[in-house]
Image (cartoon, rainbow, N blue to C red; front, side, top):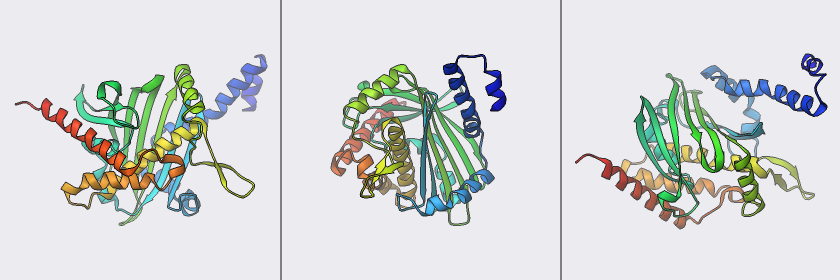
Length: 309
């Protein structure tokens, strides 16, 4: 970094600061972009044991977020009391991911397709209430199974564009076997935002989102109560947690009879959300269940209509 500072000595001070901050962030960004493997994820588990044992979630879960260079990202690491032999196969395939993603209250529909030899997930993203599909925003994710081995799985969902001028959406998932009974999961959720998206988000944060917070504790009040992060990092933390809870609810229903799995997934997702009402409460249980039943029935009707006679 000293060499970089010397090389930039002829630039204006404001430009030197900007460039040096960007250079300082490069090692972290490169590390995040590199493909992981089983040994690396197990090393993360070892490194995070203290955080997994002692945290505000009162469960083996660790969450972190970052905002840099017009990009937001959230990461969750969690210990699963389920064997990889069960978890790994269950998290592969676009149909399974539609079953997961539809649990999120902003996902109004999820349909699978194959285009140009790529597996796709076509989502409609909308409000936290009933909404016609033509009023929701279509987002198309490309599904990629990066690695699938007997003890390690890595998947990637990528979308070029999202709502309100956001772009470069990435949902990345890794799972590794720890032993015959437990697995360790890493979920990453990230997207980029430009000027239009930033303006829209600042408007949201100044109005209906002004009292919403994330999970990272940034300070404490005089009486010891936690002060949680707000702003755009709070937004990405809430959504990262919603997607993790959807994965957890999906996995938790695997041992239920097939005809009962949907109802269990929906109820378990809502129960998971209500563990953190300060951050995630939006609807009452009956409102959520009624909305999701309608959305899933609509989706099933559309899929039936697409089937050849």
